Image 1 (cartoon, rainbow, N blue to C red):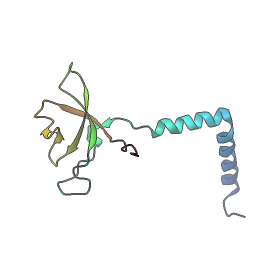
Image 2: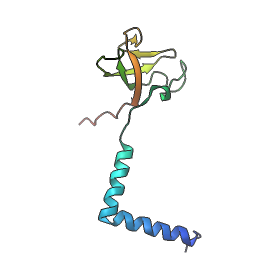
Image 3: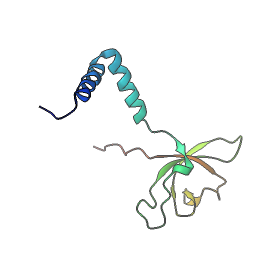
Image 4: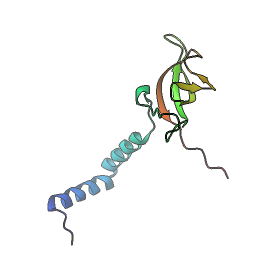
Length: 111
């Protein structure tokens, strides 16, 4: 048998029953799928490693604009230790305001 407390075994059975119930399981599966989707995060939360540190130069997606009322865009960029680089130039030098980021998706399989 197992050393798990009885309440834990009962809760596990309840959760398994919910998962296998088409009504409940569908909602749970949809919630899990939604939680797994990439989401835009505030730029302040982006990884900003020091020059030469692990992760330095890692590319991410950046949401940018040129100020209020301008068209927003998405660029691939990286933190160079002192600013966000986009298209081999500092974002600020190009007039971009970087507001959000998210990890790049995995590359597709080739074959």
